[in-house]
Amino acid sequence: MSKNLIILTDYRGQFWLKSNYKEESVDLPLLEKEFSSLGYDVFLKNYADIDFKNDNYKEYYVFYQSSEDPDLFYKSYLEDILLGLRQQGAILIPDFEYFRAHHNKVFMEILRELYGTDQMKALRSWYFGTYEDYRKDNRIDFDKTHVFKLASGAQSKNVRLIESRKAHALIPRTESSTFNWYYWFVDKVKPFWGKRYPNYKRKSHHRRKFIIQEFVPDLDGDYKVLVFHEKVFVLTRKTRPDDFRASGSGRFSYSKNVPHQVLDFSIEVFQCFNAPFISLDVALKDDTPFLLEFQFVNFGTYTAEKSPHHYKKVDGEWKLIENKIIIEREYASAIDEFINYDIRHQ
Image (tube, rainbow, N blue to C red; front, side, top):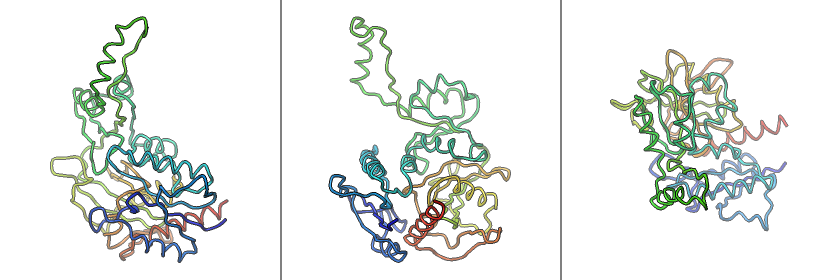
């Protein structure tokens, strides 16, 4: 198989983001150089440059990015291009299902249920497409505390704590609202137009999909973990004052004594998926790890870029290796290892 690699940039000519300053793109010339040094023929293309009518991308590797644009309009376009490439025989890195899970906690939970180990599933979640389906569900104990999450959002955006029966009704209803005056009026009129709409059922005005997740109490923080093949980078995050959320708190540190349960569990999760790297939010309660969230595409790289060290398992033991990394090199190295592993096991 050829080693042709396409790197797909967005309409601004950017690719993923680094953490030196806001909206900083990965160094594309350096990324191209790193892949070239590993024997790849690299082609930088914008999504809009993909021409299915005149070009054939069969067996090309495609390292792509997602988008976090408002309302995810542009992400919908990227989905079309990526599915087209996959249908033509290109090899997406990572595969399309992992793109689907970006800014989509519902599909993230589906991946957990499909591929996760028992410990990955220990923290239960339920997902819904409408508020009405949620209120009819009998699996959730509304007397217990839960976490509400809209399907899209990062850094604890659209995440709320539900602590009472009243909040179980109010928060999902409010946050899932898709209210529109025109459709509300039409929905009110149609039941009275019996000849044209016999047995009409009113439509939902709460269709922003969401998940309800079990709450892990008494945590003072969690761990942001990035795994690049065999390298594990860990950022310890403390919760915000008077808040249960650690993501986006700014209370970060790089410990040299990360519990082995977190490291072992992170590798366990990584190995469940067919991807070159992964971002994890992991909680530890009474030495038991819980998987809060995970992503494969366009995750923040602060944890790896700013870390003075990483962890790696050597002869069955975790070793702390002190060095600063170059994120472009880590992307190229992890993807090359991923591709070579697949080739060896075909």
